[in-house]
Length: 72
Image (cartoon, rainbow, N blue to C red):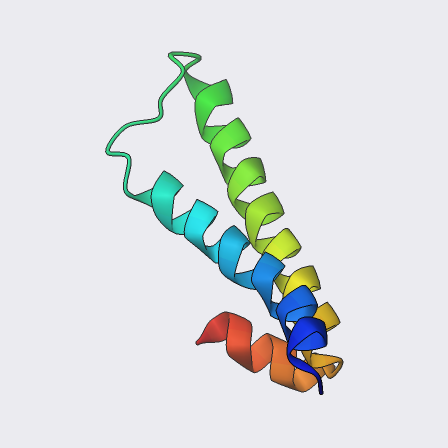
């Protein structure tokens, strides 16, 4: 695989993982919405990891490998 193709596949994975890491480093992202804050944060958490999973699937082209990489 040429370097440009590998970069095109893996750069979004690395960038998105860095975004997740950056947001997880923030000590408190509360909005002050009470119960809705919890619900919205859980939805956002699931969404950000769904995007990571989709990017891993795109890069690896194998569901089991993408799942294993996401878990790791």
